[in-house]
Amino acid sequence: MPHGDAYDADYYAMSRSGIGRKGLVDMLRDRYIRRHILRFKRSGRLLDIGCGLGLFLESMLPPFEGYGTDISPYAVTEAQRRLPQARLFVGSILDGLPFQQTFDVISAINVVEHLEQPERAVQMIRAQLAPGGLFVAHLPTIGNRVQARLYRGSYDQDPTHIYRPAGREFRALAEGAGFKTVFETYSPFFFAPLWRALPFHPAYLVMFQAV
Image (cartoon, rainbow, N blue to C red; front, side, top):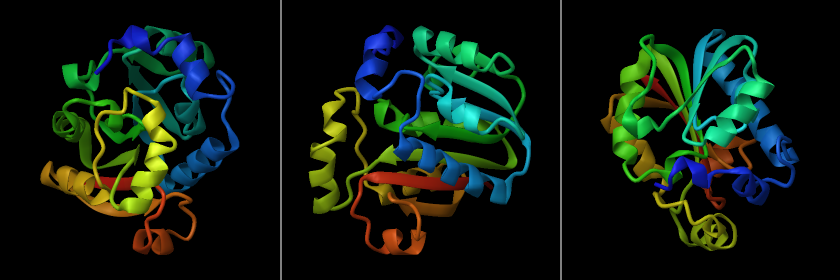
């Protein structure tokens, strides 16, 4: 995994059309994720792993109490300006989490694909969740030829994407760490049963509950 300083202002300028602003796709995705989180948890402590500029975390406040970590000092500084009420820290999930308390929700939006040890990360997330807590992950996956082709034309442009599982492989990894799957779909997310049956887009959204 690259050093945190690699995720600087230039990285965010490359990965986003406007630094500190959501594109339409991300805005719709985050609204969709929020709605599904609220099906299971109405409030509590939410930790966003790889919080970046704080854009997803911002969408969850309120009703949640916000916490976040990111390996990028630049991103955490910008996110703290955006969310002065949140508790944010610089650090990698692979090095452990700087929190004594457990969480009701832990999210990892576009994070796991950057990790050299995704199994370790998922195990650490499981250990930090309260009983019945929710783990929400969003990541690009390659599970068939269509997804592979779309991946090559988009996500492959980011050289820090080093973990490239199929959705079913990531689901099995999490279930092996003590989670049960409670919801999953692929982009464009809406009409979830259709895209579960016909997964053509790499973007995979899955929600697990700690058991």
